[in-house]
Image (cartoon, rainbow, N blue to C red; front, side):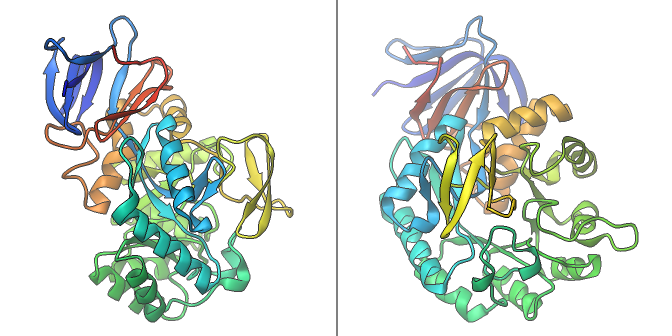
Length: 394
């Protein structure tokens, strides 16, 4: 079997940038990283000569509900395969299948399906599901957003353990409101089991958020959105996100969920080490304007926005490709910083940095090739060309 070589491109590695380099892929892994053009007879080549292309590690989205007509809560193999097949088009090579607040039975079906898919149904050439993000139902009713209030409940270790067992231990991250009754012991116990606890959909005060961090919370779900805001006498959860160095902070950078200047402010405070770009996308991503279902609710998509009938934002139709491009152009983020926010931070947090999150010899060949405008040209998932724009192999 011949190797695949991506040659004459800028290669962004964990040790710096190679201005004109080549990467050899073999058997699904990164075999070699070279300066210059290194190709053997019989190799398949993507040649970036004269095209100003940049090679990054594939993006990792830890918060995505669906895409292209599919949703994790559909609880079918077809839905997860549909999402996994779509995401390479935006440069995403792995993700957490994200649930939402629903009945206990529907969440059970979704996590059972996702656990089975992860264990048995993953396909070569598609984005890899690294686990499950359980968003809700342990959230504040006053900060529900598009999460159905009637299914919200207080944190329950028994219920979480049921879902974790049903998922074959695939729940990797759980979003909850730390001010709820039972939240702090819940965080302490769940964190002992290796699950990331994220603060979100919450009215928490600064003190309540920091208490949760002391118990093991280490993540913040979609900064600014559906959380207690920054006030000069009560900094709230936004204040905790800004001031507590233990927290890795998600942002939806579509310039709809967060004003561009608020993005710039957050980035100036957090830097690339504590920022993680996510989409929070729903099934309408990649589809035309219209009305779509979100957990039994009608969501109208128009002018790039997804909203319930009362105007509440209901996830997004954002791609990570677009989020990355906006961070580069508006916040002045360089390529090494961008890699942290689109892949490395997530890989570290999920405990998969030994095989994901950087262009390093021996790691999975999860790669995305961008043009000078930041558009995805080619995406490679575990060594398989999964999406071809203008970067075809020859």
